[in-house]
Picture 1 (tube, rainbow, N blue to C red):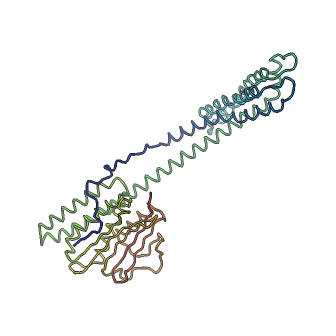
Picture 2 (cartoon, helix red, strand yellow):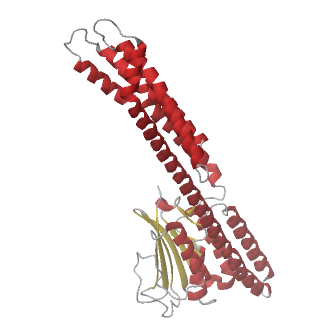
Length: 400
């Protein structure tokens, strides 16, 4: 007779009824657009810093001198001079997008930026020369703008040239970072898709494996009790239907996994009869935690197949789940024949490497899926119990 010290939730409790909202998906293109946008904002605003510093420096240096410039005028003058590069930086970023540096186009790229740097040098000299002519506190007669422009051009052309190529280099550095992030994200998404496909293939491997064993049991029962065989087929149908409902995700809530185990035990009752007692004990703090789908069923199946004798009385299987801090412990224990000496001497409890030789399809499948989902952050242990029988323990990291 199967007993349960923590009843599983009703069948109408599903993920759709929880009212959880699906977060918006951010694509690679969205990430690229965001990085480009913030790059343009940064390149447009960063010039306020050197402009402000230069304004204070000009004001401080001119203090006490005849006709000294005010702080407001000094800031307006120097910030305006530096903000000229906010315009040129946007043009340079546009050229980086429009004229990519590729094999076979180096000459075109170099000619484009040499011409653009020349245009920027002349235009900057014109604009900065006008600002110098307008804001400089001239003593005596104010000089002609043409004279100020010539002096500005002579003093600043080399600086303007270096500034252009420095901004160009910074723009390409950001572009290379963006491309690297895109490629890294693409590789990560492809790896995740491959892992999900492999997990689904492993999970689907369990369905025919279980179905084969279940149908064999029903076939044996057909010769003895047709009605009980029909009930067993109905349980098989319910189990397969529930497993298909969980096929969209590699993990499901623990309470759903307990439902799968209980349906499996209804089918297993056909072969093992009333001589088998099963106790399911679930910690209320663990009932909503996510676990890999079909993680407990292979453990229970292994206990019945390798540890329990059909028709013998006094046999039991205990299934328990409890939360231990940041870990979830799943345990399946039977009082049957044990492991028949198949335990190796090596293997620590918290090690992810197997310490049991010759695992069957179900347990091998389970360990492979755990390794894919959790890497080396899970634990798997299979030991003989002190009083006889076998104990399988799994510890999984808890998220949230």
